[in-house]
Length: 451
Image (tube, rainbow, N blue to C red; front, side):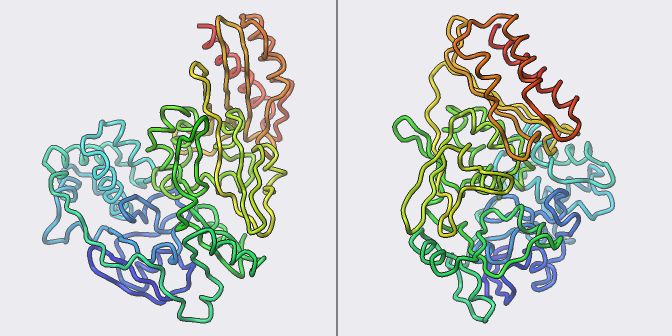
């Protein structure tokens, strides 16, 4: 298909397969070779570019989703003879090692400074956390970012013109008839009714590595990332409604989520690096129906509902009913997930999300726990909990809940609850460690409530 993109302020066209990675389009078709391919799974950041103002991994963006958008690559910052302040800072601070990962590091730093022109040292580390330096020069890299700020780099930013039309091009080859790019729900339902075998694409952070590895193939693709009705975070009456194509990055930046659903904010913040957060959608995380997914672990205790819609109408169900089994969401062939509806938590309620993995940053969870509690004068009026990464699908901890609800909170009750959850969880691997960690985290949460 023919796509058009503004790259570093210049309009470019390319005739490429819809699912060709943007990284390959940039390097092989157009000739921008500064972005490198490292892992091909969005874990190393060597392919980082800024897409419509957000840091992304170019290896995880299919060409069809880049059409009509504005892209900044390392070549757009400066040349060998005319480097910008950030590039000069990397050189002067000795932050350039072998050079393979450096372009991605610089682009990630640029994206951070466009959003936060006065970052702390910890914020710099977080902003660069998705970029691996294979020569282990992290401290000098952070020094370079701080120097660029002191040298006035953020005052040099200019709005980059997007010369594209913003509209998806009309397919120009036979293969394009198998790639659909609807912009509203009416089009989505028409496509689903006519093509029952279509695969739905949103953030693409899961599907692109699966395609590369050969674990997934497709006949038809429908990209719903441009559908207006599937975006937005709104407080409506006594509910918070989140569109299924809202990304983790959108959740993190939302004042509504941070104020009313801090545990969901925490879960989104701990799920992936910034470049992945800017692409991965809440609908994709739930529809994947995996026991290792982070967001269901807190959305279950928050009593979230899932709204699905198709040409046959609208359905609404509890999240625990939506996830039928491993990789089995309750979606009919002509339906999509439209939104997630969460009851507004009680004013004095307490929410927590815990995640433990094999390392501190950007780790896949070996255990995740979500809690919601309503406690007054040490009396537990309501308590909901869920666990992830221990069973094929995220699970409500019903036995734990029954021990605690309508009980007076004491240290003895906390010990009883810790024992109950130890017996309730049935991890498939590292069983003893997971059972003990779950028990300890439950006890810690309850002692926090006591204090």
